[in-house]
Amino acid sequence: MDVRLTAEQRDLRDTAAKLADDLGPGSVADLADAERIERLEKAVTGWRSLRSQGASGVEVALAAEEFGRGLVDVPFLGPVLADDLGGGPGTTIGAPTVAGGGFTSAEAVDARGMREVIVVAGDQAFAGHVGQPVNDVDLTRVRAEALGPLTDAGAVGDRWRALALVVTCADLVGAARGAHALACDYAKIREQYGKAIGTYQAVAHPLAEGLALIEGSVSVLRHAAWGVDALPPGEALHYARIAKLYSARAARDVCETAIQVHGGIGNTWECLAHVFLRRALAATALFPVALEEIEYGLS
Image (spheres, rainbow, N blue to C red):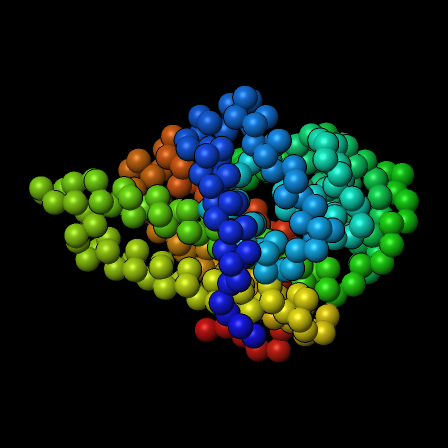
């Protein structure tokens, strides 16, 4: 595996980052800005068909990571996975998204503006319709009921499952990076006893530990993303499970640290730190992985 990104991959990453920085929410209040969401929806539409356009697992993960960092709050994860299943996102709102959880508990993710859903149950996919929104911890994505009648949409293999884990893993890494940057920026300007709080070890050390966790997450994510296309399906799924477990634990630690660094304001609705934590918790629960599914545990 060559860990270096190609020039094209770096350009894709930088473009996704700029999109997220320009149109992603800069505050909790921005989550309700309909005009911003409409502009973001138009900008993200073409990204949903990355797989059918020939993008690798690494390239999809790069986009998902930047969208997670910028809290992009229009559908991407669900449609790009539906695209890989052959759902064909097209170029308009209402394209398919995906749902997991089986028949009895299937819920469509990334359901804002979506009409169709592909339900993944076991080794089979079924097409259905998006129903009413349901309550969700994530403030940046809409989750909704998946309605029948369901029709056969084909088989689901280990390679698609590996991609699904990699994309959610990338979202976790992005959320962790965003929360960490938010905390670092705050630590530079918030003063106590005449000094920026970032100069105190009690703040600086947890932030340094968070950066180490993020770097570790990036490493396992890059390998798993490369494996989606380069390794046999079963092996790719194995490494994707490891990446999801590691990144989920790391993202939660980093996001909780970001809230602690903000002190009292970190527990208020107006602070974006809790939005990053909510997104990380939701991504952890999507296509969940248990330690028993891999051959060895993680320290």
